[in-house]
Amino acid sequence: MAKSGYFNRQLSEWQEVDLPRSFPGGSETFEMIALFIYGSSTFIDPFNVASLRCAAEFLEMTEAYGSGNLCERTDLYLTRVVLQNWDDTLIVLQKCQSVLPWSEQLLIVSRCIESLAFMACMEILDPERKRGQPLVTLEALTAQPWRSLAVKEVVASQDLWIKDLIGLPFGFFKRVVGSLRRQGMKEKYVSPIILFYAHKWVLSKKTRHFWECLCDQNGDDSNNNDRSESMAELLQGILDLLPKGEKARRVIPVGFYLAMLGRILELGGGTSDTAKARLQDKIVALLPLAHVEDFLLPKKESGSMGSSVEVTVMDSIFSSYFSSTMEAEQSPAKGVTVVAELWDMYLSELACDPSMEPRRFTSLVEKMPLSCRISHDHLYRAMSTYLMVIIHVCHGSDHKSSYHSTWFMF
Image 1 (tube, rainbow, N blue to C red):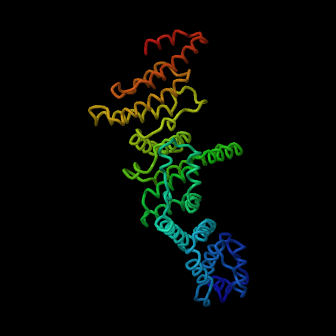
Image 2: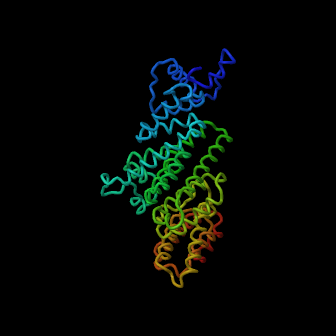
Image 3: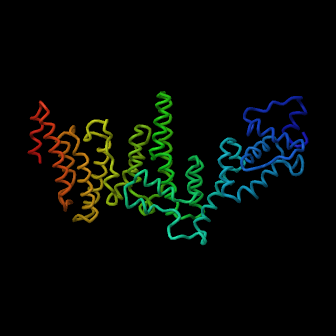
């Protein structure tokens, strides 16, 4: 009663007090507080300070009930010890999850986030740590297709503080990113961290395999739908964090946008049409910088490539690019001819599908304005591949006449 306003009130009316199940930190934290109340030394460390501070607030263990009470002691420890050290701050922020909403109301979460962002900015600005290679970079990824292994290698080469940030729950990560920008970190350093986060939690093969195994084990459609919706929300949240306009054009590889678009198509109805449209617009703007290996291809079990959603989306992206570019340019610019070649290379990938209707393949070939093609090498290769597939199908088919007109189309 002497140390706690809560017990002072409760025990003045009742001989016994039952703490609620929502008591911050549970019985283990209360045991430490009881030892403190009865004079034993309480060891405060980064692993328990958040729960002790929240429990002390619940029990009203303020200076009004004794000098050096637990609220004051834990506050001092947070300020003078935890928030001065990266590892301690990270531990406390992670422990705050178990004592929400108290840790939010007491601003422990906010203080940890601001402290992490400040120390991250100092890592970038520290002149003693300047090196020949930038601290955070996507340069190694812009010159090659967006591949899980390549991204993993780039992430592995980054400093530990970046790996720590991309391990945070998204709610905390989002706020750290906002704080990094408020505190002046340049976008060329912030954007890669967001991309690394997206790779870890949305795009990596390891993450996909984990969710697939979890869904197979449970076999509950409702749970699977919930997980799909959660992943869709995470994906949408990451898109909202990305920079817009010219800033994005300078720092983000187009392969990343294509990988995110592919993930959206995999998730199906859980994602909004707005997210798809935003990604397609970003891809159109950067299309001359793309690699054909990044383009979306349908899964083998999805039936005909020509009617797949992936090919339909790629068709729409290229159509948007050509229509917007040809309106602005009297003659094909260098970017247009590059994109034309990419389209023909993409057709070579689709041409090996024996179930694609000839008229559909012809329409894809004609999607490209003739004036855009300088070289026809990849187009000839695509047509040759498709005709060889058709010949093979005709030899084993009873409906040869439906394919004979293909020769005349070309």
